Amino acid sequence: MATLSDIRPGAQVRPAPRRSRASLSRTRRRLGALYASPMVVLVAVLFVVPLVLMVWMSFNRWPLLGASYPNGVENYSALSDPLFLRAIGFTLKYTAVTTVVVGLVAFGLALLVQESRPGVGLYRTAIFLPSAVGLASASLLFYGLFNTEASPLNDVVRWLGLGPVDWLGTTDNALYSTVGMITWRFAGFYMLILMTGLQSIDPVLYEAARADGATRWQTMWRVTLPLLRPTLALMMVLSVTGSLLAFDQFFILTGGRHETATVVISVYREAFLSQDLGAAAAVSVAILAVLLVVNGAQLALLRRGGR
Image (tube, one colour):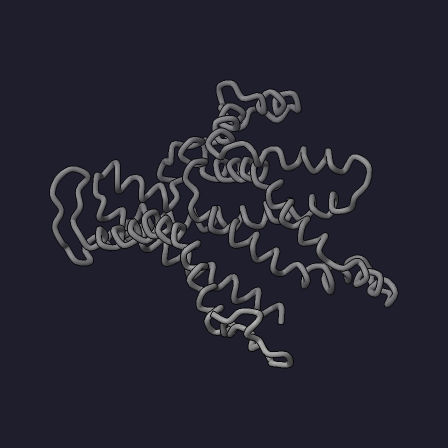
């Protein structure tokens, strides 16, 4: 081993070889894979394995109690059931109405509370608070409001001289009553998302638009909405996905009767009422495929429109 006395004056000392960039990159990738491995295992156990099992079940006769056996694509005949087709139509109608109503209300609320001024924090909190209530709890709360026998809303309607309303008695009344409950529950959540997107827009762009003589409506269409596309895409994906998977609200408010049955309620019926897990898995696979197509189309259209 060389010592300081062995080094001649004026001799150059070679530095220790540095690790190459490729070696450092490989080390970082390995560390990253190591850190991500617990989440990969968790996703595989809680998502990938059940997904594969669901697809396998859809090709088998799988009673709730008893042995299973392969039956090909016979389970997918449940997709042509009249009750399921009716559930598809009702779910699509509910999704369209809910997405538009909740989106417009949330956007209006976001415009009202986006600017910082005295007391605005209190309004933001009050609007967002219903989002902290669970969906099942909110459905039970509104079931008490909509109950025909003891409805506080009907007391107000009688006071106005309009007579009592059967809020959940007909398909249309049940639909719009549920949309009202969902608006109360989710408008504050989507307001927070949209408000974040609005606050990320540079105020200089609005000043430039006003300097060019643009009206508020023109500023909204030419500045706000185009720059808000990523936020709107997130809101639409969440809203459409949640609406297509609606279950709790209709199961609690209407009991999921035929006129107000959604596609997820159809899965519940196949699995636990008809005790046919294979047919329920087939319907679930179809719903998953529709969700992938719808969400992919939404994102593609919004990205294309933003170019």
